[in-house]
Image (tube, rainbow, N blue to C red; front, side):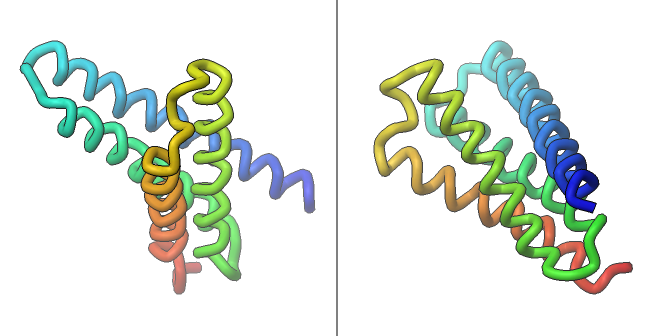
Length: 123
């Protein structure tokens, strides 16, 4: 049972990062074709976070019958934690200030939880 849960969570996280990669490739294409401002780029990156956490929260919470919003919240937390650790390793100065961490954390958690809530009441 525990191994099945861990496998579901790992699949959800991997799926979330595939969604992120696709969204960021689209954003890179938009940046290449048109001159967009930094605010649009930041918004696109945050939208990729939310979309990825939302979809992974939906996918993982679908496998559970109770507390689906908590499964979605967990997916958002795991996604953010991996993102934060990789950012610290890759670029020590990036993503370390509270103004960069808190909005991204909140959006990842809320996106995942919303994905879990979308599955609430379904069988």
